[in-house]
Image 1 (cartoon, one colour):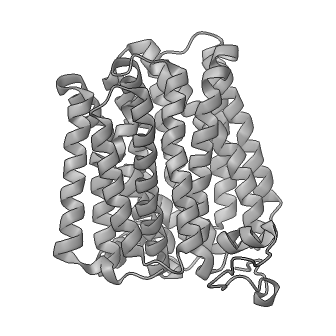
Image 2 (image 1 turned 180 degrees about the vertical axis):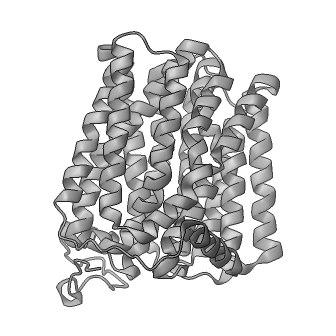
Length: 432
């Protein structure tokens, strides 16, 4: 498959190791040095389209969480709807990996983004007509999750088609930054938008935002190639699983990802409940919480993209893991919004430092012919296991309180991280 690669000599700053204090460098050169993935035209198109689309997605995340809380007043139902939206990833993501290894990734993404747009419009229409109920939300969430099970591994591995492998960590870090930049912008305006046009208007705005990434994908100069040599789906899935868990590095990273998805990352699901019950706040403050978490993730993007050639993955994973766990634990001991915001910043910084690094490392280790299936397993561990996490965090929050539920998960994540670092030790030898 052809890629739009730029000649090395056109970017003489790419490998600069030191910058003199008085050296005059223009801003464009600085950006290209810190974010090498942005030198590719196709990636810049994708970056722009995704930024607009993901802002809309975060508008919908806030609107849906608040709508479910308004309809049910229950942390359990918030967790249940979130679980239904990710349950299909648990069931179908491995098949999604087979599809990604067999068909052109760009066409797959155009299809999945179009379907997500339709579901957003449907939610918006039902909400505007005031006929929406929890059953409808649950059904649409489940159907959308089926699409996402294919979309996630396609978007993750698509980076290999539009940037060179040596710049893959930068592209993946920028993607994490995209998601979390949208997390800052989207929730920050969600409260105002919901106040002006209601939750239905937020859903419609999200639907319109998908047009940006679809147009960007159609504008790319890329050759779409199919691979018809893959075996039948079940055999292909078996090969992907055997390949992933026979690799000592990939396997340990997948296990750790699974644990944090279930016991650590799941806290974000009940953030609307925590905002209302613990802090006595509303949707505007919820947006600020999402924004603080996203700001930390955005800083992580800059750190990884700018320093991945100089710092080992082990450092990012270790530092990120302990920052995430520490920030999350301290967050459970405060009901002061001003204290909670910096703690969520630290939590977001730590989460993306470790998981952007894990993603890059796995993609770098996987061979081309099986990368889609390997990433589908990563998707299964990161997003597919979240229904279990969502159910457990919702259930425990209703029975022992949200703070205790989050602390238990954080301590379990810490125990597995320590075991991985000091008992196994294999990730110390990872390279980008």
